[in-house]
Length: 249
Image 1 (cartoon, rainbow, N blue to C red):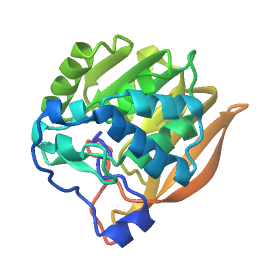
Image 2 (image 1 turned 180 degrees about the horizontal axis):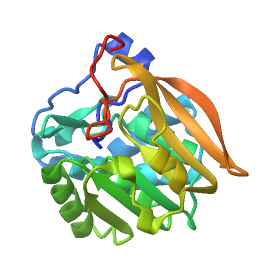
Image 3 (image 1 turned 180 degrees about the vertical axis):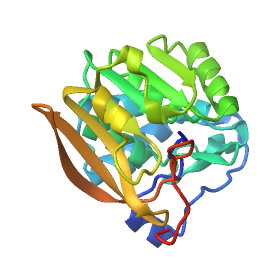
């Protein structure tokens, strides 16, 4: 399963014309106050849009996003749009990362599965909140790079697997939360089965590549309850159970 690396709110996409990110000029780390940029990101991009969870805001202030993008992109790492990370992929805009994390309602006891590791940034944010994070990436080069980066930065509670995330990680189920960062036509049945009682899954659902709905599922008494959150655009699910080309696109 491929990472939903181009996640961006529909309104912002229409206003800015952004979809796959913008390149930023290289700037030495010794000339940039990244902590100040993170604080500005939180105050101007997240809080005004309804990100209020204290744990999420703390994580967004703490995780050094600029270390999860190529060096040439670091000067714009905290800007309000996605950025390229290689392999034709991008890192999602900060707001989408914060929104999906907030919807998950994770805490220090939570066990979380992420489908789509990318550069490892979302996993690092989750790791600041949850007890343990399992993350799966289908693109081996990205997955190996993210695994090494997370280890180097000391995220010992993150476990990385290379493979098709559609099947989840059953040997570590059930999970209290699941984040899927690629568009699916419906909630994958293996992931639904691995979601624990009272657990939440955040996933983009839709029948068109140009528009999906960020969706929250919550399992109560074995029944999956669905809530539509907002319009969004993500790259599609890949792999044997991935998005099939057709007229609905």
